[in-house]
Length: 456
Image (cartoon, rainbow, N blue to C red; front, side):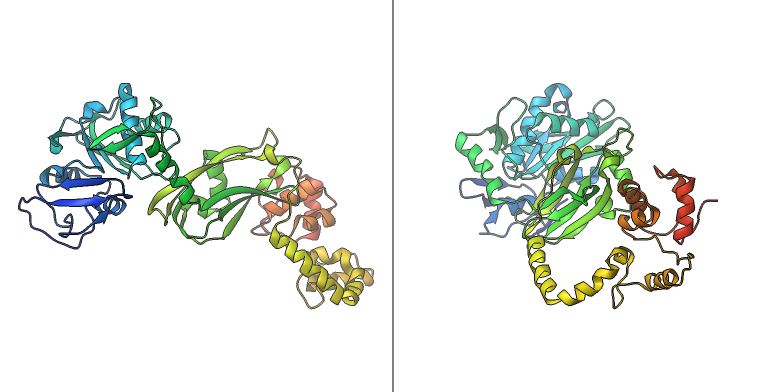
């Protein structure tokens, strides 16, 4: 439950006062009657409140950890408040939203429902909250729907006391997306162990946090060749985002599992700056079709630890493919530079380009041999020149959709489905279920491509 400190003290009762300094405006005195090893602050030390919050309390998850608050007589503070279980009731949603938003607008902290207090010190556990009538999920929903904007990184623990009773602990981080307004349309802060309304200048101070901390992670859509849709995850900042996690709708999560998009499923431990991960989501015509199993409109929630603030933050990205329908994508700066390099190389290799123009029509199925032709393509040239119609078969795995369009004579929509189907292997198992595929196309696939697990 407790972390940090350079000093280890005994179990005996003793007074301790430590003056904690916030951003220069507030001095708070914290007193403890009994200090556990790891809680002490060295004499004469000045400790920033953000550091104090991160290192002093962590979210309790067991009764033993809850009991330590009473055993060690940990006093309420700017970062800690005890509440009677009766305070956690749907009919008191404004009070709950006020207390949670006050922690987020201040320096973060811990709310514990199920511990009674006497003069700001814990007196012991009460009967607990009826977790059957008021579940952890319901509390999450109440907090999310009664505080605006939503607070990122809130964690809730329901610690069972009995079959139907629990103590609830809420860990609230200091927010960089505030100020957060409570259900009564007021802004609150922590002051003298209480949640009190904020002054206008204090609201502006919290609002200025946004300007000092830039977001790091972005989720966006990229459309390639006008029809292929990719989901991109980019660290747009200049710092490493840590412990990045994603919350996806059920249908999109199913897609991630099927495509083995592990970053969406497992998150990213360390996400370096300026890096982008790209995952193919599908092709535009199919995704916009009413029969599509994948949604064309959904939200992705991203949470991560921002090194500039030392705690979790995040954002919600709304994806709507209809926003991109009929739009043209402008080339990036890197793409423009690439064009300049390409033009220079074209001038230097004019004669080579002239020679290559004779075989340009078949380079779409070419490899990276010395003259930009694969061994298979060279063998097929030999067959054509000798009048032999039995051409070498191609491995479909990893081929571009233009190859399928050229070899099979199908449109780009069917070709892109085939590209996606054969993306990881040349297995043809289940090819009959691909939209637009018929027996005639299957016969052509067998004729021109190396297939494994093929249908009869």
